[in-house]
Image 1 (tube, rainbow, N blue to C red):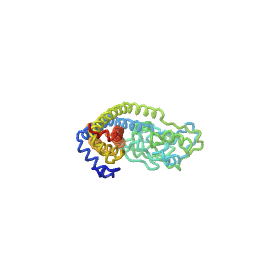
Image 2 (image 1 turned 180 degrees about the vertical axis):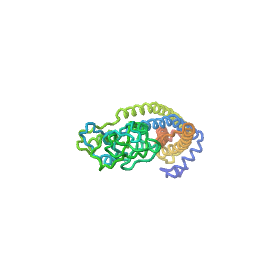
Image 3 (image 1 turned 120 degrees about the horizontal axis):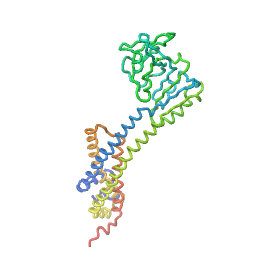
Length: 374
């Protein structure tokens, strides 16, 4: 022991001595393990579940259209060029983009009493439009929304659509899609896949931002970067109301859980501080001997913090494993790995922060006064 604690010890010696001290002080180590395990378990099954629920709610809101930006040529003056969807889809902040042409009425030649709107489609059909029957169209083919398919009486074998005047050749309908969320209006529309080279202009372009945080920046970019004859005449619409609602919901869901987490951490800091005070009081003569034999104050502080960390890591590991297992079995929803790692890291930092002043005080006590025999 004397050689080990002469001056500044090596890291391996420091770890070995800390492990020996942790085993020797079973009550202190057991208390740290129990406290940290309980804290991590409690945070994960309460705040962690709330964080998982918040993430699920926010993700659901995001899929409902907080990332969708619509560009329209309402007056027909902007002249959106047909290559606009491909140009926008190549931007780093865009997940997908597609464009729609002018609306025309079409009927089913076999049963012409029903009418629906048809638009030229340029670009890839997005995932928000779910194919429920048939297949995706090739250029010159059409796919009908579920509402339009019912209106036009398109059966299981599908059929063709054509303007009522018959001036335009019939187009084969090869599939039916269902549209929900912000694109729900398209369920009553027939989309005709068209090469960009066969169109003069588009009336609408829809672009999906990669993340809700990029919507404002992307909205400003699209207002000027969209290929059009007169970009100033474009109308760019972003779901600002939905984004504001998302932020409000996320803030309210997270506020209560964060307050609860702060309370748990505060109580934990007090318990750890009391435990460390008891541990250092019981070892004051040991510290005095080490100081008298040449151990530096920093070495004593490092040894105490290392000993504390060993018990804390064991407790954090056990509590985290128990918390995640409980959530998996009871709710099936797990917090993100970032949240889990953050809780574990915060618990360890809190432990060290609570122990550091006490360890520093113990290391700066006068060894002569400690070792003085009454």
